[in-house]
Length: 231
Image (cartoon, rainbow, N blue to C red; front, side):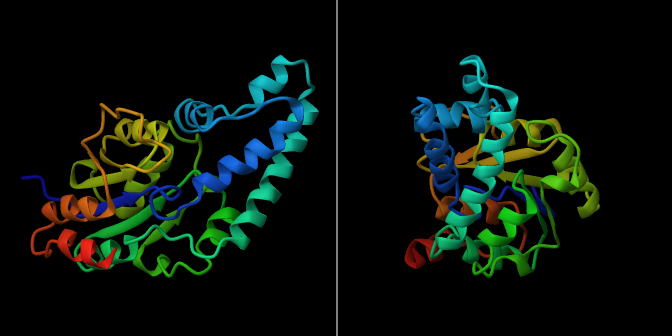
């Protein structure tokens, strides 16, 4: 049985329920230009291939200056919608983190910029569970490159074989695997259709995630049943 000493967590779609807000921010900015961004396109372009929808604008003949302006507008719009959201923590995640915290080291490796990360966690109460947070400004290439996870392992002071990552996107999974990490993928409405064949396992709920993580940690009580009652 695999045992672990550390867990590296993705943020959006794993710790906080923010991906729908990010999708809507992109969709609303692109719609005036005749691009009706669907959830499937958002997943494929942003969460799998990591190139956004800007290629569509450029293909229509728009200048790069427009893309730069819309990126800045999206940053502001997404921040506004995060501030307006009432509760962003994923249901049950606090329970999972609290159960793990006495047993393993934990860090966050996110593609979110610090501004958006801090706003999304303004009232979650989750940050004390982590030894560190690595936002997009803190490492070289973004996911699916392994840079963030490699730095995360350095910060943990642990080998990849003694850790796991928790992700929800194909590019995040590829980044974790490229850093030598086995990766657990958490299902959510945005990624239901994707197979995630390269994942260590795919879990369908927060309760199942808690059960899998507990199985890796000697001395940690199973949390799945508790979570089902909690949720």
